[in-house]
Image 1 (tube, one colour):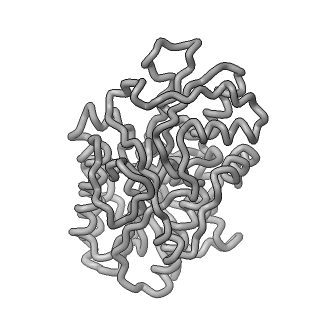
Image 2 (cartoon, helix red, strand yellow):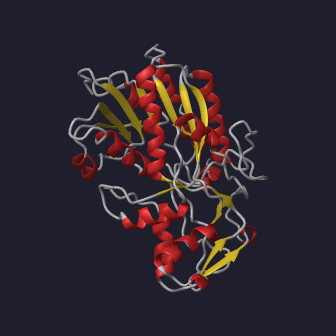
Image 3 (cartoon, rainbow, N blue to C red):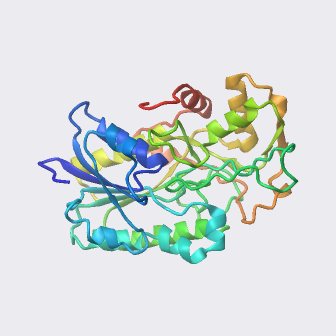
Length: 358
């Protein structure tokens, strides 16, 4: 990662859903002459070959978020970065509940911050995704194939993906950044602990509290269930499917999240003014899972009577889930001038753009 005068960016969790979309944006920001030197950390035996082929120049290295050993030994690959973007986490709420120690070890980026601090330089910006940049349609059931209370499908973690901004308690609508964080499960608690650790140990940081992230599949397909694609798949079978009608989120299109990160990166690299910032990153629409399914059905022309609204309380998921963690994104709009697209438009872009590049 020899800069040759270019600014250096490190993406942690670069082989996951958000990470791959972000790497593509960084690589193509200026046509055939990418303006950055980019490295990405991944947690796989080998970096995805399809991803490597698609990038003009990006240095991969494998890392362990708990031990941080590969951060220590990566100095030959990664020079001191100007920006670090952390997209990695253990984001399956149930897995965090079963193994809270692992949730804290992975989701609180101690080794990453220790490595960052070793440079003894205040000119590095950390952009941290304080949620599972991810997707959860795990609450859906298909009556004809499952017993009551069983999960039809559990959306897994992207490089980290899961539900959305679980740092909030979920007892009201449109949370603001300054509202109290009161997570109801271990996943949310680990994310709050991460925010606290970062704010106490980093000179410059931006914490992004993202809602459910959705969008087109990546060039190296992730194994998790992508929400729009999954809804489209089950409704296309012509069978009744149950969706929660009383849990509300503000799903956000992946390209909008990438745009937020890219704008913050450019701002930091251009003026270098101190940043200590928390931002809600969600779409403009407060939606239940049933309403999300209806949007997909409307676009595809499926029979909306296949969508059966049920209460979240009717299913034991083995982990508490907040009822309403819709978010107020007015600070995002005001500070960055970014207006996330509607869910209706996001569904259309997702299902129209089924292949890479976007």
